[in-house]
Amino acid sequence: MAEFSYRPLRRDEMDVAADQHRLAGELIPGFDLSLHSAQDTRAFYCETVFTGGPVWGAFDGDTLVGHMALKPGWIDHLYVDPAHHGRGIGRALIALAQDAAADLQLYTYAANARARRLYETAGFVVEEHGFDPEHGNRVPNVRYRWRRA
Image (cartoon, rainbow, N blue to C red; front, side, top):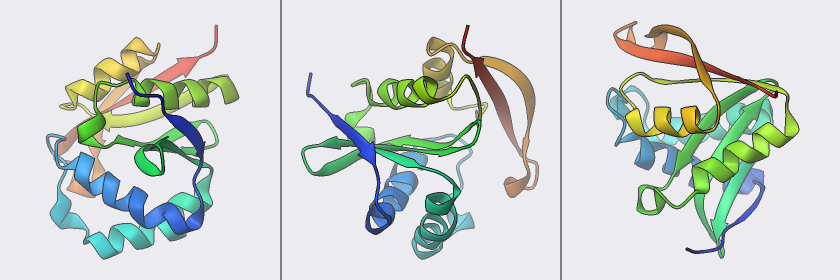
């Protein structure tokens, strides 16, 4: 198994993270790439995600292979390059967040079985089932919560 390094991303790395968001998102049932252009997603990452809290990156050498955006008490985004799924990157990113906070929440699509397994394995429990308003309340989501014991 490859060794990965982890560090906060810089603003000049947000375009790569935004592209990764779209690439990994394509595999998520219900994720609708047509809602936002690649350019809009890049702007969102630079203007909103980067300024909302730290964004941690997982690197294989100099290549970004996963990232996680945090807000106080929340994992806001977590995406791993599909070519690197199953290599412990998502779990390592979650561990970074859990080391820094005693209480975390996140949303994921209800149909995203891979992510749900990851979060449940990391100790997150379902707190609420709902719908994603960005998709006209058509896409079911799940709110998870983790608290340090």
